Length: 470
Ligand code: NDP
Image (tube, rainbow, N blue to C red; front, side, top):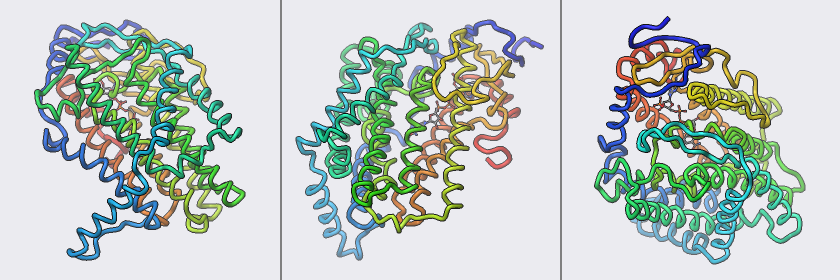
């Protein structure tokens, strides 16, 4: 049922897709700097200074003010308030040599094992700026995850390095992570410009550091952008949850169901990223976003040291403050598992569809493979660009089913402390802002890329996040 320009089909049609000449022209345009995002140079400068300050402020509220929001009591209290805040940072978040040793050992150990552990080989999407060459990705995150867990268990149980140190020295380690975030962002920018590998540059220094200069940073077999996206933030989060559980066990002789919930939630997320790492090259972060401050800082410092607030709260506060009824626990766990199922299967449906289109799809037997993770003969729209848009599986109900499910997961990470503290709600509130903004940027780009086909797609799948709601 093909027409000249736009057609619909099912994947029994096994031709490997390739961009048309018209598609290539559009891709060229999309690889140029078109307009400023994130409020331009001023907006990104505010974010580069604001992110670290916000992280310190939230940590101080959580750690020193019983998890409550603090603010100056009057205009006259503004200066003393700032001095009080600074005092907490100076006394408890100065980056000590010990904190440098902890973060750096973890960081370089992750890099080392990424080089040496064998992995599943996955071909990425054709890269327009490399004349549609594809890059090979060595997907060894799962092997590295297991190796990390065994190493950390040996260190913890032998008493060489007890995991609870991460909770006890949280502020200092967070400061070191921020320093890494800044250093690597500026380093990546200068190295890229010196090597002449920059693309989509605006010419404004602050903006280009924030958005990044390089699209595919690599050292040998390691794709640094993909490595940094999974190995640093999600491994640290999982280890922080184990540290929280260990801290509770030391203190009370048991681990609360709330803390187990966070161990499960962080495990599921990390395991999803690792067991389906071959799907990551198909995501927007890999094929479009450059390796700049926005991605680097958030991977090295933002995600691991802000998404964990509920764990930090529970590790340092009386369990009576966040105890639920049995029904409450059942609802919480059921919400997480349902959201996880939709997140996992919607991501794999689209990524595998894209691999099928490219002729690179192979079954990878990692645990767990969930039902409906791959759609047999999926329905799609054939665009004039050459690409195809999936309109089947979860993708017939909404244009971002993966975002909705991910948002519910983030909400459950905060609900786990109930109303004991507002600080853990930072994650879902921040995340919804990020995803709505990211969705807007993505749809703008897709509208440019696919033109009338995108309009047609939006008619067939009219809702963004939740059918009949939004
Ligand atoms: P998507 O997986 O939605 O990727 C968007 C791209 O996919 C589009 O640009 C388009 O690319 C292509 N596309 C869109 N719709 C279709 C379709 N129907 N059929 C085929 N291709 C389509 O989003 P992301 O890559 O942004 O997200 C990946 C995941 O990462 C999400 O689940 C998100 O929640 C998660 N995430 C988590 C974060 C965290 O901090 N926890 C932060 C950011 C993301 P093309 O132009 O090639 O067609």
